[in-house]
Length: 317
Image (tube, one colour):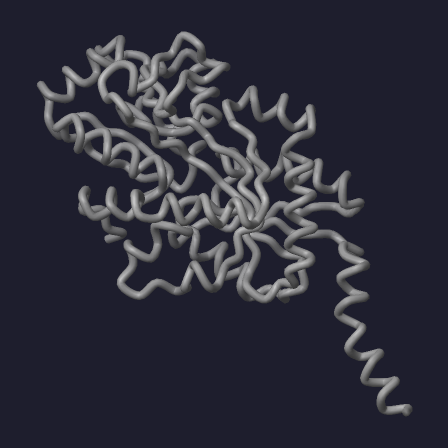
């Protein structure tokens, strides 16, 4: 009887631990640099998550290796529901890009909740001769391989959007990858690069400083905070839509109950007026999906993303 009682108590421990979750601070490992779109979303939602869950949420930026550094740190952490990953298209792109991917992304990471969509922009440095997206395309056709464009990072959604833009229009540009959107924004401010394809959030500082001009957005519809900026779809590329996005992931092994609770908290945070106000100003479209909905959405994205990589011949080398 003593052994049965002890065994029952031991088996109950994980359930009791889940009931108490969270009883200490949580960690969000962000796979991108501070100041960019993913970091802004993580910090804004993370602050509200702290209020909802009653525990502090620590943001840890771990860049490098096409998000592999952050992914590895997440996998190495205890699978106790106190470490989550904020990642983006790397979850879809690393497999077709790498000869020996470090993870089986379908198996090793569990989708928790999509945070938001980030429409992207094509912007040029202030003294660039093109004033409209149509003039920009004409300039590219007249000057093949002479115009640089920066994105964060190699093989990220911005890079894929830029390659699809070139492929469909039959133009050729020089790609300059950066670790984060803030880095690309810094260099267009300084006039180091001719143009950028970055999120509406990342482009704000150089535009506000009068150092860059937005020519078009990559979303299907105009961005409410940029009502006078046309979409690529309505100007030069009918049907074009390639937004950036980010979401929360857990390492496989984190208890399902905790994942569901975390997803519910993220969904609630994404609906908070203060979060929406902050992220609307950054041009984000808040989502806050369930794990099931996020997983389904990721699967729909996988084949089109892999097709762009193959068609454009994108590699990490």
